Image (cartoon, rainbow, N blue to C red; front, side):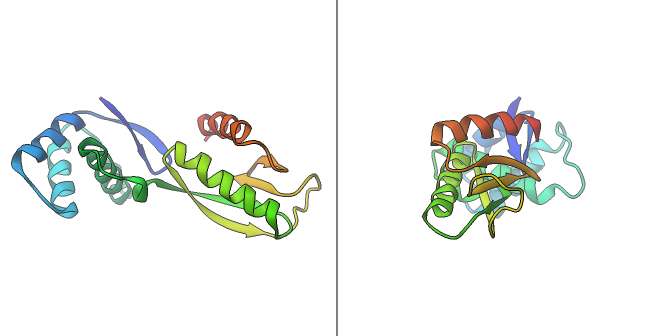
Length: 154
């Protein structure tokens, strides 16, 4: 079983590596054709919830690209984040740092820029999932540790 990020959830997929090997053996080309084949191969042994088909398709394409050694960064799962604070270098730095750290978890932030944080405390402020993740400008290492801890909560 392979652990795969589907949307923002880790799920186990049975037979993924074998299905990717079959794609390579059959010689399919094109995203649609490959993902359709993977879904048909994996459908019998894996549950795909209604409403999650598109997220699974994206995850399977990302995993196929990983299997063949391709660049799959375009297919990272999206996560909504809010960065509050006065416009300027600090807020821009936090957005950049957040983007880099989330990429390490194969996530791509969809950033909403807000004005000065209303709760007080240092600017800028990073909010993910309604929870303040960071205030001020934490180091990349500190932000990575905080986000890693928070991911297990989400």
